Image (cartoon, rainbow, N blue to C red; front, side, top):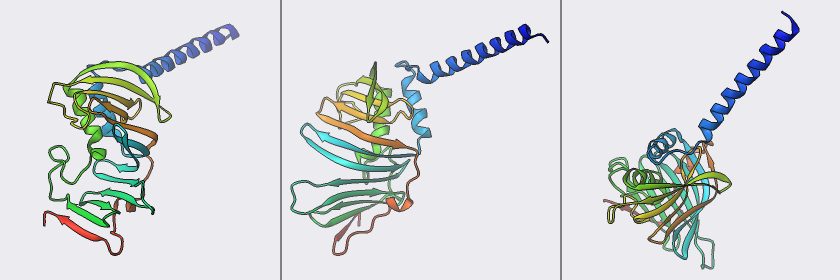
Length: 234
């Protein structure tokens, strides 16, 4: 085989490889349509295993900063250091398959709910938190509302898809945020990185990591010595 023919084959091969690369790149970076977005979010959340990060959440000027650990679908730990006290006090929520613990350091009160016998996350908020239901609430809002995909923005150092959602009056599946919601979805995991609602509800991550291993002991809570333990449902 002469040199010219070899060169031609190499050039064609490189061109084909470049074409395939561009096709994959365009597929992975394309912006979904409003019609396809809910299904793509559902698929992304289905693949998501763990979330670790720091976020602020609340309404208007009453924002609380949380450290968050999530192992989907039913393990969560969130900690918030309470301000305005003369000592360090940390509010703690710890959820697993069996129990949901909430510890109030001001009252030195630990409240525990049995989750093993309770309803699923889809039909009850008893023994759970908006921090846990938030991805599913956003997905339900995307399925129920009218969507406008605004574009892409950076949130918590990650590329996010900004989506405006208009929901039927009084029928928002994401009650905390209301009927007019803007959500920023991580472009790879489709997990909500920020939310703003017409109720004044806001949530935004400062940093976040996905699919990194979390020590199982993170989701086990032991009340501090001397704490009062109140078991809901007994």
